[in-house]
Length: 172
Image 1: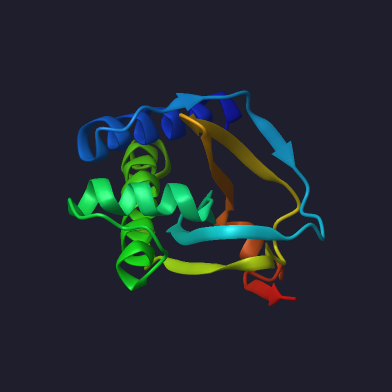
Image 2: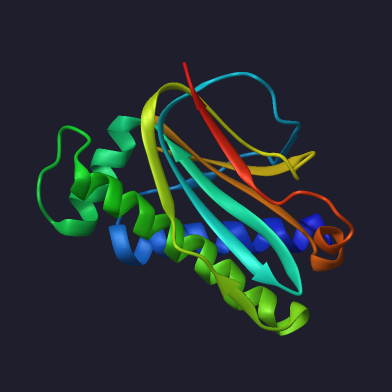
């Protein structure tokens, strides 16, 4: 799949959800290709798996402050600390964004299934998929906060070739 198409779909989906569902400003930044490292994350991550003719996953990463803003806008209630409601809201946001990308991909890739989001919150945690060599990263700025959408997609045939397709999360 052409990266430029995937980047466009991610940007459109993210901008649409932030505009329509959250009424929050969002601005796309320059795209990156990132090889997984041992660097840890602080904040919230929503992991959303995809399967079908292509397999992979999307992940939404943001800090606690933006997660609370997202939840406050989505649920129309003030959230100042990361709670179960905040984690649910971030999971749903990941589901909406990756789900919109999935829907658009189906026109060229055929039927795809969207898995249930897994949401993690913590400090200095590591998340990686053993099948992923490189993530496509589309960063966004929501005022002073950064949000990243990471995607990895591969033909389903890669999985059948014996490559593992599981994720590992490590907490320090």
